[in-house]
Image 1 (spheres, rainbow, N blue to C red):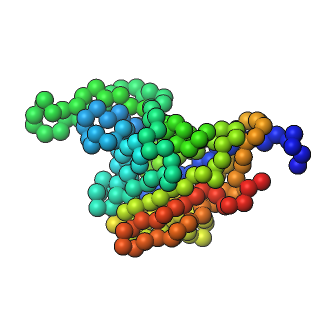
Image 2 (image 1 turned 180 degrees about the vertical axis):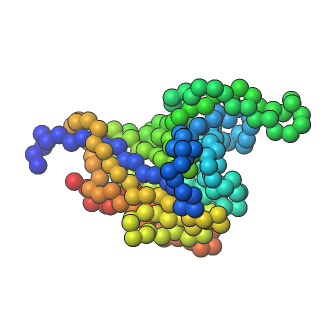
Length: 229
């Protein structure tokens, strides 16, 4: 390969599913709705979403997934070495509004909450955006890697799991008290030609540091092999 060769910018995508739920029903194909947090939950949360069998909280520095809405089974996902306070914004405004009528005191209710189909974390790593979207029992997230950015910087750390393993299909399986949470093998898409873009050599999960049974955490997982083209 010569120095003048062109490489494509890269989009890396992975899908997270709850293995205890079956897909294919009409409701399961409905898109997730990400509501802006306007006081209806912890102030650290920027967006929240409730699907079939999962509750998702998107904070500035981490993502919390609660299968079946159970706090005791919650899994926390954090990007190791990433910007701790990235710009977080909703994309694709959805029709209608949500109303959180919790309790008997109407003064504590949160109403007219806008919702979005996607949420973007801008520049979590230099030149890399993270975008969340999905369906009712399936959460998907994409890393948008700009030309010149290094996808090898991406490392995900998990906390709150009862175990972590790679299955025969190459999926990353996180054991929880509510059942397994499965991250399917990531895929990569070259979105446009540009000089200086770096591309991962493979699209598989790699686990670094192992799993700590005392804290229920892993120190790092990366969505590709270490070899690059």
